[in-house]
Length: 292
Image (cartoon, rainbow, N blue to C red; front, side):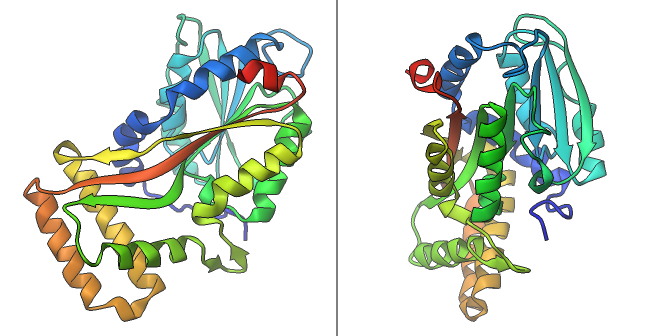
C-alpha cells in the first residue's frame, strides 16, 4: 500500500490547522530557494521560459499553495497531487490567482500517488512541495522521492514534518508517557509499510545529500495558545488517541489525562508547542553557492 492510497485527513482538520501551519512555516527558506531559481530557467531544467511549474504532493485542501503562491514572484502553474478527489476539488478552487508581483497563477489537479512519480514525470518542474507528508513515508519512499527530484533537477520544499517533541504548559506527569507512545505510533508498521515518523527528516537529509543536493532545515513549530483552543483540543484528541492505539494498556490513565488536558484547554490554561521541521533541498552543483 502506498502512502496516499486512501484519504487520511478530513477537510475540517486541515482547515482547522491551516492558520497554525501558516504561522509555523519557515519563511527563511524562501530566500535561498529564490536565489537558486534566479539562476535557472523558469521551468527548472527545461531549457525554456514560462511560468514556474510547482507540484504540491499530497496537497490536501491546498494550504501550501495559499501560503506560498503569494510569496513567489512571477507567473506560476500549480499542479496539485492527491488521491482524494474531494480534497483536490477543494484545493483547486481556492488557490490564489495572482503571485507576489501580481502576475497570474493557474492551477490543475491530478489524482494519483506520489510513489508513482519519476524523474520523467517531474521534467520541467520548477519546485516540488509537500506539507505534513514526509513523516508518513517509508525510508524507501523517501529515497525514491529524493532520487526523482534530484534526477529531474527540481528543488524540494518539504514543510511541517513532525519532530517527535511536544511541550505542554503546565506540565503533567503523564506527558512523557503519552509522547513516547505517540512517537512509537508514528514509527509503526502500517500494512507492511514501516513509517518513518520523527525519523523522516534525518532520512530525507541523508537521501538528498547522498545525491549531491544542498539541504537546509529549519524549525517550524506550532505555538498553540488560547486563540487556537479549537485546534489544540482536536490535536489533543488525536495525540492521545494515537498513543492509546499504540499502547492500549495506557487506559484508563490516558482517558483521565485527556479529560484533564481538555478541561485546561477549555479554561484557557493550556499552551502547547508541537515541534516540526521544514526542509529545502537544492539539487545540482550550483546549489551550494545559491544556498549561501
